[in-house]
Image (cartoon, rainbow, N blue to C red; front, top):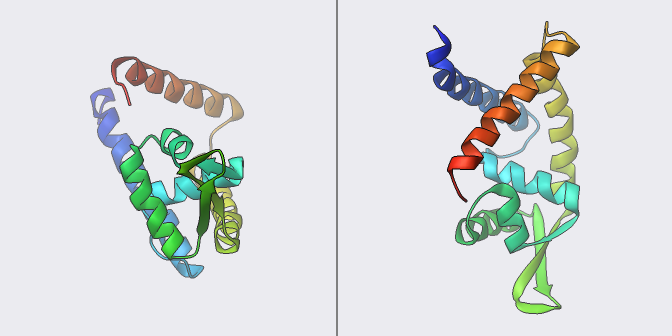
Length: 146
């Protein structure tokens, strides 16, 4: 392995961490989710309520894809929605109790994931690594539009 394998390595780490979370969520009685489903539930825990457009922007998906993801979560009882009083064509999405429960467990698992991820890293190494990831994101953000 060399530095030219970085993207492959990132992809592998992404896959391993997704498997880590999927297995632990399954052990807690939650179904397997696409990462976008978890991201929607996370965004709603941070923002409490969101329009479909705002949610699509936050999860970096188009509105039609977001609608499909939201419908699945709604059908499973994780979120609920209602018409936006200021725009009847739009919906406001909220976490249901099941979504709040999921986020509580996901928060615990996130801590476990980060503890594993950064095992044997110094605080300085963590900071440098995070700044490097932000730089990579910025590099790609400048050449792509979503």
